[in-house]
Image (cartoon, rainbow, N blue to C red; front, side, top):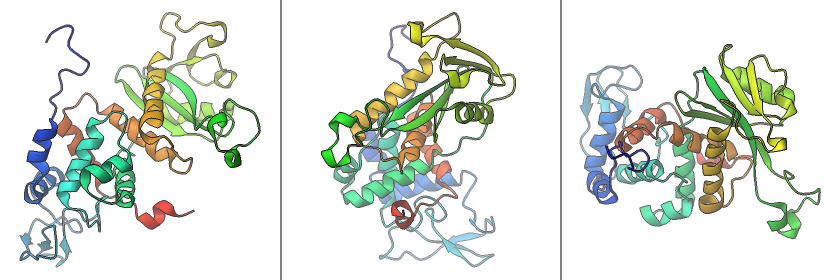
Length: 315
């Protein structure tokens, strides 16, 4: 490969025209979803039986219905996933997966509304359901790990008069987010936190790293005395790199997240902020993969997850 090729040049992408040709037809989209959900052949989602038959097509249904000959239950490729009970066609779901995989700064519900020809309300629900597929962080980080925190929310001076807290500027009215980046794998993990004090931030580090992990942070007092090998750079005196100690990788992730905030979404409510964090974290962690592999990961991550609209808007 050329030395001056752009980042992630080794990945195989899918052009917009190819995506429309590949997923624009419901029959083709259904076949693609089936192959990704059941690579070894269709099996019952309840009893795992492979004695499956396809019911006679019903013109009122957009998705083929499968029948298990053992437990006598019907199901579709949507059943038991984030697409459960969705009236949107599989071609629209496939294109939504494509858009979320290929837009690094996210996709607004208004853009989904226009691009997919659905209501903005449906697009907003669809987007949050897709974000659920990335909520799968389990393994602890090890090796060298950068840890940092940031604050998400609008500037106090830009708010409408009735929304201003009149409690100062800076972090007032914003939500704290803690994050870490494992240098060897380049993977990121982030989460909304209730505070940026010592118990909270050190608890986040301990819960997500192995005992022998080397932690790099800035010189915030909350990180002092943590039960990990620890080195810090003194941002307070203009020091940003000292040998291996720096948090530049994590700060790069914050930069991408905030570009999505200001340029795409414009607002991330505290109530749903953790979903947006999952989106940016999940997309970052699969960036080395080909586009279709990223989309296939969304299909696999959708199983066993549901997000009803009533639950989404509940107080």
